[in-house]
Length: 500
Image 1 (tube, rainbow, N blue to C red):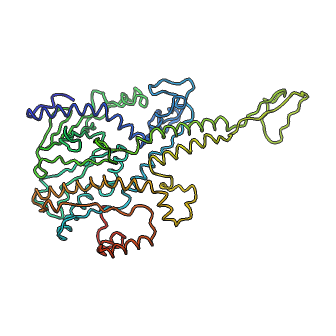
Image 2 (tube, rainbow, N blue to C red; image 1 turned 120 degrees about the vertical axis):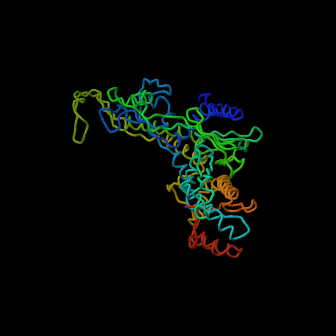
Image 3 (cartoon, rainbow, N blue to C red; image 1 turned 60 degrees about the horizontal axis):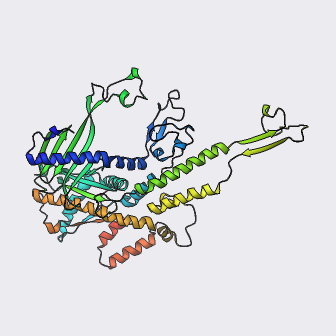
């Protein structure tokens, strides 16, 4: 980015902009490449290497490559990471994305049902107003789908940041029923977000930068981004055409307000009144990691095992290909190569030394099967997600009742999800309390600091039978939990079930 971005800024702001530039450069060259690899292993997207759908333009070894192929050895892919082709050529490549379905299952366990946010205010009327506003704000921002996106980003990268945007012009004068339209909760993908943490406490933000490249609705006349330059293998010289212009956008959010830069030039900025000197960004760690801003993700620990699994599956596919056809070695028989092998075919010879030896076919390889099974079991242990969680039942669950047997089998996944509900729940609560603070500062809804506490009420986790559910509900009533709330948790109440 250009140093000209300081134009129009004060001396203090220029110093802050220089720091932002340095951190963005560090993020682009040191952090972002690693994050892109994590996303590639989770998503495993296809990369075109030939014209899709046209046989004539297709590569002789297929028209696509998958992201996880970068972890396979050269003897399988036929090409090293630096693009050098191997003498052996490309072999059969088998990719089984175990990482993707495991992360998807964890997200389903986290946000597979509506989530409720309860107010901890003492006055019941205040509780009702707060809960209604908070619920509408989350649903206006995306509802349960937004929470699933948050969980997906957190599971892949290890953390995710939530930005609370407030339209102060719309907030002032808004009514209780429409005030949610002034708020927007936006998840920031870690590849775009750069946290500027306090030099005395890594848990406290001094500022936050959002840096990304976008396409404009304008044509790039100089051809720097033409399709031929970017995808020369797919578009011939005669088909060269212009592409859309691109620009780099950087938004800096600090305690005093915000500043917007485009291609390094200052565009606009402003201050915030309703949130004061608070940076409206909430940090969520997937699983807490002490003394580090980023949390622990689910993809990184599985990558070595995923590479080993794909390597062994590819090796097995190559072996099966070589051994799938029965072959014969004939000695001392004339004309054997002139006819095929089949029922009713007879060869005769006067040579007493003649013989026909059959070999090939898919022979059993117990050590190979055992090794692949052990890799899968290791992935089960590291992720905490057994195949049963994905609906794959391989064996009997035991002599316990079905619910108890399932709960024991899924114990690792349940315990891990409970641990993560602490970090995600805290983040949801902090964003909700920022909303209440803005409402109070704007004078729309007066909420004292003591009444801004909220808590996340999660749905039931793990397989529970109807009889156990009813017993648990009756126990709650006996302990003094309102019957209406118990009926809501059972899905039999008349009130709103929560954020959907």
